[in-house]
Amino acid sequence: MASAVNIIRSDLAALNRHVREFGKWDSITNLEEVDLSATLRKIKEYAPNTFYLLKHAAENQRPRGFKDVSHNRITSIASILSVGRARNSGNFLLRSLGLYLYTSGVSRNVLTTLNGLGIVESYDTIRKAAAAIKQ
Image (cartoon, rainbow, N blue to C red):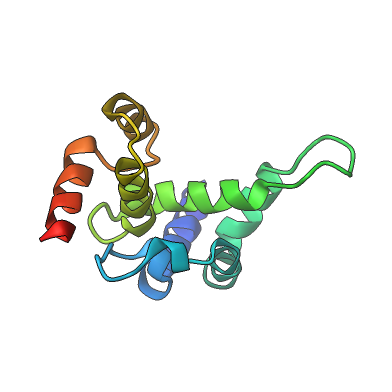
């Protein structure tokens, strides 16, 4: 089992080094320009073992014909794992999503709940980042 963990950690390190969406957040990149379908292709390229694991673990058990949204889950899970591995240098998607929601008027309670699930950074971190962007 330890070897599987090492393989996944190696994949996450590759994502952190080579894929902007899994790297350190920067205030220059516009989240609206991020193509999440291209991000999925990058996960497949730079983290093939993690991609395979998540794709098959998240496969829909229902008959064909249902819309497959596992690619969204794969990107989200890879992002959460990336932050778990490298909190300050793998926070691009979490902070970007948090800022998007914050500037859209989402309540503090919702952001706190999403933070507890590992989907966005803390409310205070998001608020401070938003204030820094305004300056």
